[in-house]
Length: 412
Image (cartoon, rainbow, N blue to C red):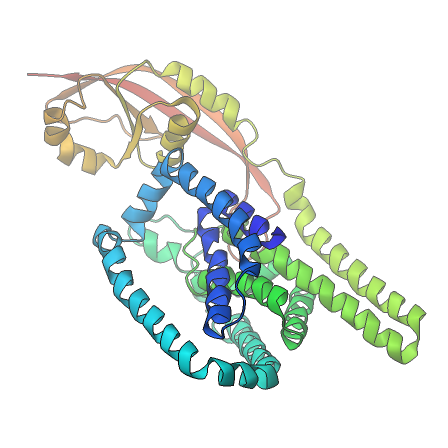
């Protein structure tokens, strides 16, 4: 029950934590295939379904914009529409195959797995360890070939993905090499003593972690790039590191006595914790975006009531914030795209009571057939952590943004 609740709570933090729940269905199918009782999975599945359902309701209501973003940037609409039909056939075939295997070979497979199951788990864990070493030592690009920043007009998305192959290296900066080594050691040790609980835990870590090491899909600036690993992977790796520390202390205690084992475990734990604290403390000590909420509240008060607010890029973050916090109907638009879509927007009636907002030091906007009357401007400033690309960021700076607010008047 606790495992189901923990995975369900992770889904409340990030909807894609549902990946970690895939292991429950795999282990359920495994027991079903071998003819074992599946009643034990009820206590795991009940809280998982309850919390997962709550996460889905949130995603379909409050977080609808996020799902639309996933659809626009990552998953084509045609794939989403076809997915039920694509999955139905293979699912039915898998059920038929599982029924046939269970009917003919379940008893024999159970005996084989009872004898060789732990050896197979150990080999799988060593394969994961090898893949982790490859991602850390071999896969990364040479640092000198990587851009210093991202967001350039020409290669924006190329720069966005430029650091994808560095993901393991940069995650270890925060995890620290000591915790990384201990966690992988703990992973292998846990696989050596595999049982249902450990399989559930390790499977959840792998399902969530492997995908985002292979396909990170996040902006390369640190520490924001760590966010996909925060709900499941980082806590789990720290827990595995603690398991390795305990096992190291136990092993030393058997050889040189209990006191030596306690000292060994204490030294490893303190050294790992101190290293992690030393790396991360400057980040913990920084209140990112301090002053932003007060500034955005002033901005919201400066924008008159209107049916639509058009934020000129790069104002997409501010548009989303006004939408979420104040319920203002804000849309982010590139100026060129807005100019091209003016006829369609006019035909749809989306220019009759509208406001246009520029961000930064942009030139005064002008669009054929429209007259923009400036209503005022609002300046906001807030604290930012420096964009970290090739090292852990420690320095801070004050970001200033100027918003110019225009009322859209349609001309005949």
